[in-house]
Length: 382
Image 1 (spheres, rainbow, N blue to C red):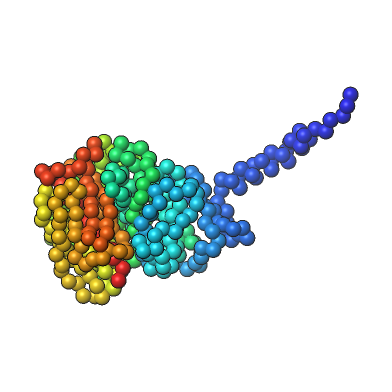
Image 2: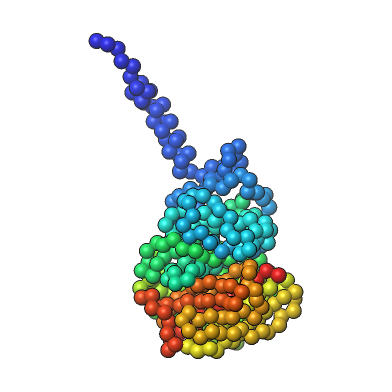
């Protein structure tokens, strides 16, 4: 009988199994922050998939607060490959226009805001694209030594994952320059020092946000749903209650059925939604889709707020003409406002203005008889 050498796993079964386990663990578990390899890897909360960051991305030893935004302009970029979004439409108060985006899977993205590693803060996301009929939301926000990671998912109106462009903003600033407040799963801030609260009221998906001491009403709200499902949220209303500002938030399933949902919310008056000093120019507006009326419009530049009139081109979609063209940089966030399950997205913006599209759950554009309105917040760096 001819002798045949037994395979490795038969001659040394214990050693073979140990090696196999080591290989599997190396593939699944995050690597340590210090490595001689070309990248550092983590498994972010909310997605069972590893993300690897090039070691050329700084890992700051101390916590750094700041703000940033991106326009993720490549909806279907190669999977698991970081790209630098359009430099004109991204910003980072610490690292400059060096944020990164990666496409993790259908409709799923990670945004790395480099070096903003203080934690806490608030993020917002808006779907972008002409007639895209898409909603985008946050899965989670996480703080790594390399910066702040936003995990974003986008869905079609039926709730199926869909590749999409989007805009995203984030801040961990705790400014007191003007009325400025936010609350999110990661943290909260109130420029008056009060403690913000969220209370579930009435039917499912209905909430009341209380911002103590923010006794002004000429500002703007932004709301973004957060979590693993395809639910989404909007502003149902806002009002003053004694010394406090109240925001009604309503959340829905993709079909437009009220549904309990986690969300982030920001309020600002005569300032910008990232809480930066006045040298960051900012515009915001509340506009009524039933007609050409526009109110609560402001511009800020170099510490001198000046009220300027927006123009409106009626129709579907509605078009806000910019009071300070050209809008050739910066970021835009949009949140629907009013009663009923209507969601809004940014169709596009250019030197003539910002186009906003709002649809019902079936994808039908909001008509001139709609009772819904929309908030628009725009950031333009000075």
